[in-house]
Length: 481
Image (cartoon, rainbow, N blue to C red; front, side, top):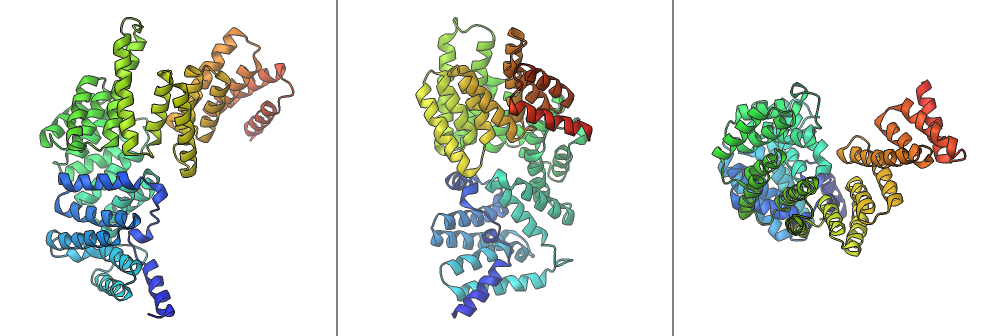
């Protein structure tokens, strides 16, 4: 093939819809962990035949990224075979992404003739199943794209949401598309003022209406309803889900989470251990177990029984550390779990070990621009409670709050700062730094007038502080607008 023909082929390839053109980079996911999850799905038979075809084609892309093109080719051909067998008379519609992936893979291994042949097959399918507009994709492609974005990384959740929304608009009664849309809404929606405002709850109900046997969706709806104190309906959904799929690790994992959130920690631990027997390499289940042991440990501290139950507290701490170490070994980019683990090392008086892990995790998280607010929060807690260094705690809580104020971690950073500042101000009302911190706290909360009052008070004692002056000018200007 001439360089001109090669260039023309590459141009055509760039115009098709498949995983090779969806900007799925190695930096956005943990490749090894994703491969393990996909293999687990195949071994457990999750998704049955149609879902297995998608899993094989997705797995093929992961193997290509890892440098195994021959294995990738075999998986794509397996995906094609399953699609032909299980997708009915119009199976060709479901081959479009697979043929796109095959065209790209053949191009990358240097077989340009086969690459072109897959492009030709793709063109015939497009002619056979045209869309209403050239700007629209087939719902099957939107669906495949949505599932890929959803499973690849939380960084692609917004794109997954957009794809599923378009797909459901085109095929409103498709169970898989409605399930994908519901799961994505569940993962992206923040808690709202009421059940009626929740698009996730509405979509979960719709998806269950279409497929009443989807136990995963039932537990997710239960978890969402529990957030709004609808415990009766939530518990019924969870019970029904367990009755339908008592051995599915996805179901038992979410049931474990539900039980933990309701305070049934021992039941949650039993449920999660049950799930772990079927998916022993799941970092999420290990993390959920760590959260259970952490909550049990913290409840003993709150009861003021540390001296009486020190051995039990220490045992719970060791269990928590074990599961966090396991989770982070299975998924080295699990920055949230790494931050929790480092803090626990600090609580266990392993200060050097904690500092080292925080330092390494910060470096890796900065490279990926991932979970930095979580790290600022936990490192602030480490400095405050383990290292007894309040100035550094204030520094990291402040930096965490400034990253994003409306997230759970951002709010916790603000709460920690407020607690520190109010304690200091109660001891010394003229503590300028405490007043400045409270000015920042109320600014983050959107209470501008109160923020102005505290910055004014801070400047009385520290009149040349440029930081306070700048914040005060900015606030006064915004109040005049």
